[in-house]
Image (cartoon, rainbow, N blue to C red; front, side, top):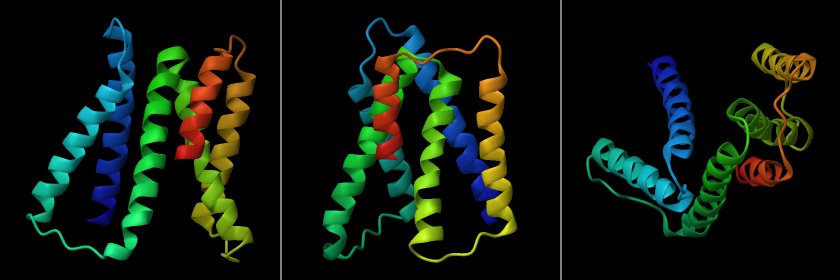
Amino acid sequence: MPYLLLVIIVASIAAQNALKKQYNLHSKKPAPFFFSLVLSVIAMLFFIATSGFHFEFDPGIIVYSIGFAISYGAALIGAILAIASGPLALTLLFSSYSLLIPTVHGLIALDEKLGIAGIIGLALLFLSILFINLKKENEKINLKSLVYVSISFFGN
């Protein structure tokens, strides 16, 4: 069951990113805040439906929840604006590199061990960097897109 959920999550994220690009391509003037609001409302409705309307939480985590909401919102809006101003493939690739931050933190600060899955993941990550640099006619990320993808990277 956990693997099925993982596949569903990956498919949902891929669909969400494709939807972002289509929204930016077909919108005369993209409104990233409205788009983010729509996605957030859909996610909230899904959460409400799957939780069975049972809302129990510890008030001590409210500050962390607000911090997470702000950083996730910045990541989502940064990704939408980066996709609107630059190539989809490079934007998503650079945004996914944000996974290196918790990985390196775990290895260095928490003294976690790197297993075979982690080694394979890092190898694939570095392979993606290699393939992007080998491509002859690279799509370039402009400064505007770089700023937005950086917001997405650090918000993530």
